[in-house]
Image (cartoon, rainbow, N blue to C red; front, side):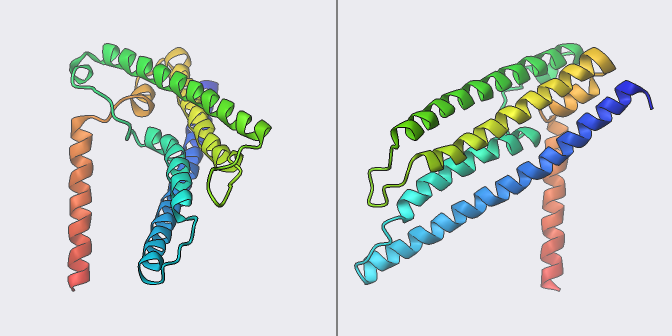
Length: 211
């Protein structure tokens, strides 16, 4: 196997592992949201019936939302779930469309890095000042902000990794297919196929349950 091919294979293998890790992060984030919903439900029931309160369910839900959101950014990038206005670019010739995809990826990576830097500044201030939430729990803010920062840092890392893979494809491999795979927006045909497969799977599942 030629050296560029081996490097491309290593790149793709690393991205596949990152994809698995990001999916686990999304599942954990979703579990946090579900747990916060259960906590709020319990809190509402206790307030209504026993006039008691857990005093922390609402605050935990804020943190869960922020942390789960930041940790979902990388997965959304890998599965191309971020919103992109591509009504025009889809009609362009392949070289021009690829150029637009690369520009979009550069912009997204720059945003991810800048956002991570801004969140780090907030985390650093909370850490140095020993800031706590203005609630009865008095949660040290560096804890949820640190988890929030970790999600943004992971998003920035994945963005930079995909940008590097795209640059390698263009400058070393001289191929456009990897650029479309990692930086391109989903084609309309792909969305239709995905929706069709999802509906078919749901119908098969429903048929199996009915039987």
